[in-house]
Image (cartoon, rainbow, N blue to C red):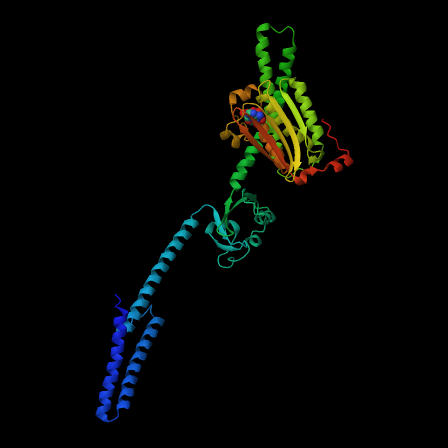
Length: 446
Ligand code: ADP
């Protein structure tokens, strides 16, 4: 424990006075008082210098030497420095232990982790990142990650800074490895980059897609034959009365199966390619007028269907795909809204792009279903949806169609009040009215 510093300083001053006093006595004894004082103080100075030398020597080699055995102020200084040194060693060991622990735990992670600074330079990475990205310890620290992961999509993913979605890429062409990158921002502009090998998942996904596409393709021909025979049978005037109902039901079900197979094939075609559709200019006003007319012709006055075209602008896209996505929304509104309800179709454009919405006064959809609605075969009320004859794939197809046009589907609904399905298209998809008219590209349904 340190002594009171004032006591030490007092003791030190007394000591100097005593040395000077001893010098005076010796000086008197030899007949030269001043020489006696100077000699005594010189000895005291030599002693202090020796202490200083011992302290410096210990500080330089303190890992190998014991602290000097000095008393007074020098002793206090030595114990203070020792204490600071011990504390520093303790914290150093603790940080080292934590760091080793962190390295060991991140090394056992199945994903690669790379920490990046605000300039997207590598600060640190784990063992899996070495394996997946071919990074090298020591040499790659401080290097821009995009210059090491040489994939253009990855560079633009980092540049855009929109990290809500992950990115899947094949970094080394020909090797077949598929990597998924996910960025998580932290601190002040720093990023955590997670890298995962999703090759197996991709293969399974491709196998699943191929299987569905092949199975649907194989089912199409036998179904056409069955539907054809059932149609002939249903038209046969000599059909026994007790068979009429079963045949009608079989015909209805075979039509449903044909619709499901057709939708599965359509979905497979859309999933096979995620490149953006370029397409051609579509006159949205004309397309919506046709959709409204088709609905009213089919359902008569079952619903009050209104159409408002708030922009003369058209849309650049694939007319067949856009027609099918829009029609599915209109058809759903009609299917799920009871007779007497209202359906409103609207097309408008603004600074964000073009928007098509279908609002209905139907039963609405509970909030917990909304995020899953565009999954294939997801239905809020499976029994009721099957009665309406739907395939359960319409919204899944619609979502893909919009994705291929750079757009997205937003669903808002209040249970018991109705729903609004809105297709949003980016600004660059719009065909400004004068251009569309000049090109004379009025939409004509096939
Ligand atoms: P389906 O062929 O069953 O209509 P969709 O993919 O088009 O398949 O729709 C999925 C489900 O979303 C439907 O089964 C239904 O439960 C719900 N749904 C879609 N549109 C509406 C709507 N306008 N009102 C209420 N529910 C809807």
